[in-house]
Amino acid sequence: MDLGRTTRISVGRGSGRSWQKTTLQLAVALAFADASIVVLALPRIVDELDTSISAVTWVIMAYNLALIVGVLAYLAVQNRFGPRQALLTGLALFGLASIGSGTADSLGVLVAMRCLQGAGGALLLCGSLPLLAGASGSGRSPAAGWSAAAAVGAAIGPAAGGLLTQAFDWRAIFLAQAPAAALAAAAVIGAHVRRSRPTRTEADANGVLDAGTANAALLLLSAGLIGALFLVVVLLIDVWQLAPAGAAAVVSAIPLATIVAERLGRSGPPIALAAAGACLLALGLAGIAFVPTGEVGLVVLALLVCGAGLGLAFTSLTAAALGGSGSATTRAGRTVAARDAGLVVGLLILTPIFVADLNAAPQKAIPSVAGAVAAAPISDPLKSELGDELVKVYAATPQGSLPDLDPAFAPVRHGASGPEVQQLGALESQLQSTIETTVTHSFRRSFLLSALFALLVLPVLGLRLARARRDRPRASGRLVRPASRRQSESRGAWPHPG
Image (cartoon, rainbow, N blue to C red; front, top):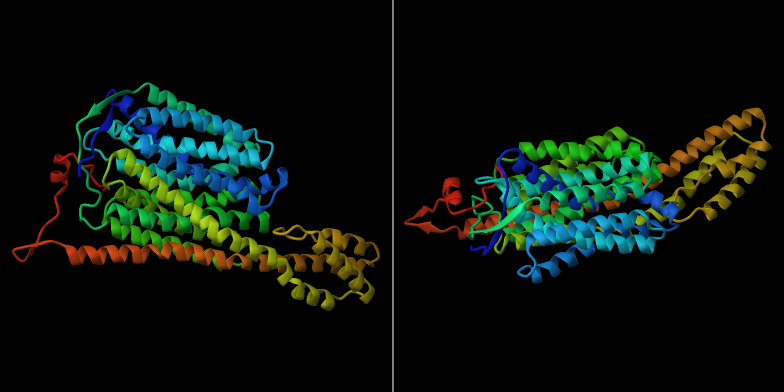
């Protein structure tokens, strides 16, 4: 399939070419990380900007929607606006919008700046693949480096954002991105661009995992990732009351496992790697759904499984998706749009479900709370007074938040005897644990739906595999062998990242 024109960077050998490649991969990782880097800061944004969980999800959604629209818009004018210009414009817009996001004083301004960031990210990602092809050198796969940077960037976003939030403030997440964008822009400006001859490409040497199937699977996989990159953060910070740095340490299990799995999974049939990765992601998400309250170690183990699935599936699917028809820019754009569309679909479907379950959870705990108060070894007048105070606390608690029981117990302690004060302390801990357990269980349905999104990748891959076997050409009663890697490379193909 003729790709038409492509762009190649003429760079020096050795360290110069390696520097260009590394910087371009940094830009790709930065754009993909930005879709999730803010999740650990959302609780603080909710408090500081006086908003709600439902509204603050637009900080994530706005970026992804703008990125999709930006990709589609750029693909319509790519013949008049080359990849180098797109990348530089995208980096400039991304960097300026990052500064604007870091200085926003309202949710509306922050969402608007995130839209500009998304537009910049769209230009950045569309222009990066053809330029990375030149920086990768002859015989090396730009798809491998691009897809690996995309997987690692998506995985490392929440952990990086949590550390910046804990060390400084949520605004530091955005302000720190501007220097990174400037560094990437400086590297691109130093590159000399020339046009090369048309090339041909194949994504899967077995002819099974085509670009359309890979993009559809990426969409579903990304929708499932909402559970690992967003829901688990809300659980850790809002329910289990972990600090952003502690939550960042927990979710760092995802990028660690992603990097290891991506390296181990560089060889092997892409369709098998994608299926195995989807199963691991679904297994990890289902595991989180049934983790007992406060069992952080089990969450880390489940996230390691999710990260391994991401490393296998995301990388292999992205590399296959980049092997479709059209220019390198077109292929990159389609892949980015599919991936971010999945994140948007996941947020649109899962957010109202988990917010409704989260809002209803404290009310579901009322019978257990009432039963514990009635059974407590304290006097009836204290029980009656405590019940009244608990009703007041429940009424004053915003939706989506855990009730703070201390204001209910504080006035009751003043009229209690020494032994009763101790009993009240034990009762408060019991009630708090009961509420946290009920709220933790309220996430179960959303985590299982996220796992279902990941599992839906399997029938998509299965249908493609069945079709490939049915339509496999035969000659003289014998199967026609696919082209070897050497034959593919002789036609100018990008080899599969094996």
